[in-house]
Amino acid sequence: MKIGMVQFAPDFGAVNENIERVIRLIGNRDAQIWVLPELFATGYQFVDRSEAEALAKNTSKLMIQRLAKFARERNCLIAGGFPELDGSKLYNSAFLVGADGLMATYRKVHLFDREKEIFSPGNMGFPVVEAGGVRLGMMVCFDWYFPESARTLAKGGAQIILHPSNLVLPHCPDSMPVRCLENRVFAITANRVGFEKRTEEQLTYIGKSQIVSPQGEI
Ligand code: ACM
Image 1 (spheres, rainbow, N blue to C red):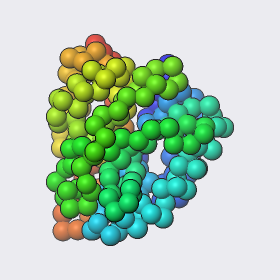
Image 2: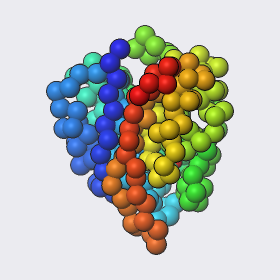
Image 3: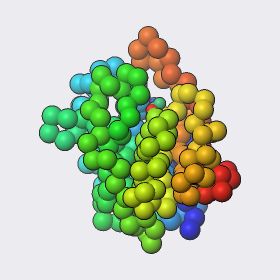
C-alpha cells in the first residue's frame, strides 16, 4: 500500500484556496490514502468559538464534496482535519473521505491549550474502520502526547493510524516511532508548517511530517 501526506502552510479562512492548493500539491502523484494536516482547510488559530462555528457551518459540506470528487477521480481515500458542528457542539475532528463521500469521523479527545475554549472534547472514543483493505484509525495532533490514544486504536484492531496534526511542541516526531513500536502499527503524521498570529500569541508549526513503520523506522 502506498500512502502520501501533504505538508503545507494553509492561509487562515481561505478554505477553497487551501483545498485547491492541496490538490495541486498532490499533482499527479499516486497513493491509495492521502493524509492532510489538522484543520487543513480553515486554519487553526481561531480568535473565538463563533469564528470557528461559522467556518464549520459554511465550509464542511463543500469541503467533503470536493474531496470526494478527488477521491473518485483518483481512486483513493483522503483523511484530514476539519471543524465539525453537531447540534450546538463543535469538535476538532478528523475525516476519512472516499469516492462516495464521508466514510468516518473521529473527534479529537485531547484538546490542546486554547482549543478548550473553542471545541468540545471528542465523545466517540477511538473508532477503527475497515477501508481500502486495511483497518484504519485516526487521532489528531496532541492525542500523540497520551500513549492511550495509539494503544486504544491498536487494541481496536487498527493497522494504520492516520494522524492529522498542527504540531507546535517539538517532541512528537521523536515519540511516534515508540508509539508504533509498542503498538505494532504504522502511523502517518501529516503536520503543517508556517505560523499564525491571530491573537497575542504567535504559533509556529514544526513540520517534520513522517510515516513510521511498526519497527519504528521513519
Ligand atoms: C495541537 O494539538 N494542535 C497542538
